[in-house]
Image 1: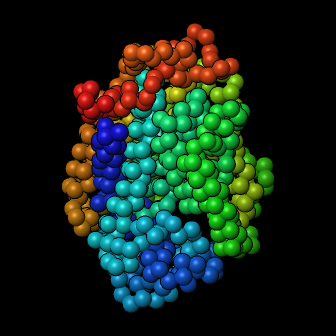
Image 2: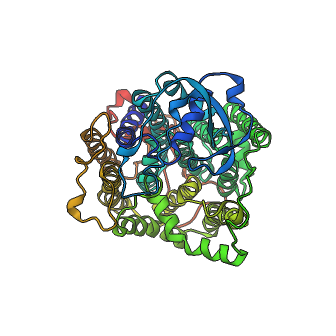
Image 3: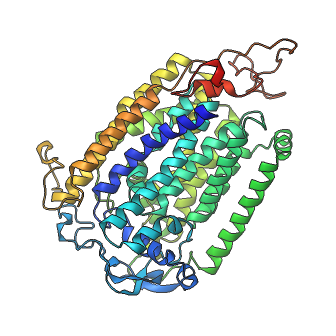
Length: 550
């Protein structure tokens, strides 16, 4: 277990550096909706029940347009929306006043009805120090939460994936969009990380035969990520329901009954049910789904027109899944998106083609929840909200597709050598895109981005605005983080573990660990039946392979 903790710490540092770079790069309200969430966080951090359960009200947004939200008693200097440069990519952040304190007063926020769980974690620094220092600490806390979830997902997948490919596919789902959001104050980042962790725990737990002793940590990770999905945002219960349905159906009752004997499973089941009830009560009580009707005539979409717009916006959603920074006004050159889309999309397609009908059913459920449901909500409410769906909202659920694909491919097609090749291909082609989006965003915030900026314009060290901690800091952190992440994933073991020989007096195992009666697939390689799970411990990077430590 010590080796598992060491590998978790290594993975945590890698993800934390990549996410943390954004904390030092962005101006206040540079990331989407950061002012709204910061005001909510500072209000919740007062620990005043009247602020935690703020009364829903009609409040103005950054541009004065009415919408549902609440008022929080926070330093009035926090009401510093970046309207002078938001949606204006050619204007730098030098025009903004930035975060400041001032007297405590009633400040409106459209996030005032959000569940307080996330804001308890990040709000105290903003309440105590409403300045760049407090904002930086709050951002780093948010980054750390996301990094912890992904590090747990990494260790879980590495321990149970056959050739390490499923673990390496975290590089495909931890997109620059997640990194950008994790480096700001926004619960959407933790929601995405929780969705990834849910699939990382659920795939080996629910799609492989039970091992109640060795898989106890998976139960814990699945429970934590389920609670986070259910509570952070109002769409979370839908993500949870579709993800659970995709993994648990068709139901294997014998497996479930074997897990049910664990006290940990019973406790987490009760905790998740309680979280679901409390989340539903919050959604109803705080009226999180209530909308303010727009000005008459503001939107006039016919149903067919709305469907056509949603369907024809598929590339916008793909960009949002991969990475669009700021107020969705920092867009990289198209080839960077194509590299990510082709590599990850190809993985998903291969998994669907080579998987059985059960796997295709899981694909269908994920796509219904991650694409069709947002589309239905967007089309049905187009004349109330306009078109507001972004790819990042779909990411908590759609992140399951590449993980399911990798799990299928390393059982049906890829061997150790091919899994290693695929892993290192993702390292070489995907990791640099993180740096590209950071540089694009820094240039846009520091000097503004012309419509047709040439290569020579992308100098992140010049401009009329610079982060208080300097422009070099986020670049150094990001480069260090990407190099460290590359080392971590480059060292992922891809060899199939050798079987453990029975000791004196022990009978040899007669059933593979990855299969059970009635579900084995002839002709496919199988995991070995082991007396314990120490073989996975010994395959973790930086694990001490000496027998005395196993």
